Image (cartoon, rainbow, N blue to C red; front, side, top):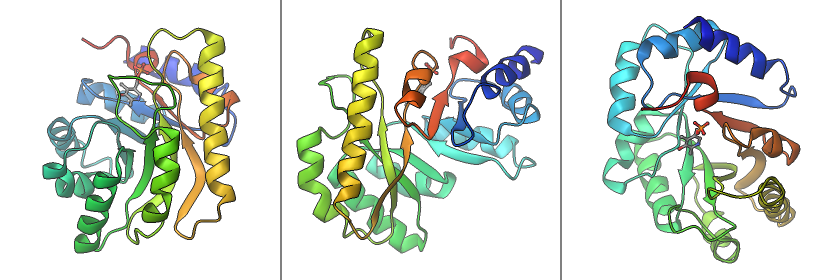
Length: 221
Ligand SMILES: *Cc1c(COP(=O)(O)O)cnc(C)c1O
């Protein structure tokens, strides 16, 4: 547990001020989450709803944790997901966005969300490609309950450092392009990208939230 706090200090010391470190605690024990909290972390991300609900129940005393959802969202669990998370990073289709907006309206709640994009083809990942996202923007801009704050991306495995940087920069460029369109309800003030293996490149490309698991908690089982 001491190791966790040492790893966090090493990372935090080199982070620019505007970058928010989100500890990805999927598969990680509640004790390890507490250790990260003691080291100053207040943002935690989970990818499975049921697992998150169980951990949140055991961590109720840490009431200032901000919970981020980063897994693929299923519509039949949309309501519960909205009730258990402050931020959703993985809104990955128009259909899902429209549905979440409706549920958010019913709950009278405005969740902060990212639109997940994949600018390189990747059969293992969800998300918009550039063309489809630009086509869908007018509809997205009409959603009144979701607070769309930016783009989120996960890079495909096996890219060279150069290709990773290019892909992150393309994501930043797309966010800028969307910002230029002066949408009424869509803001691009946040950018969620960067994991343990690529976060420095993501920061270099304008990331404002990095999502780190392994480098904080060690290899997942
Ligand atoms: C698991 C996961 C992470 C963390 O990955 P690490 O390589 O362990 O840092 C970040 N983002 C998403 C969406 C994930 O699923």
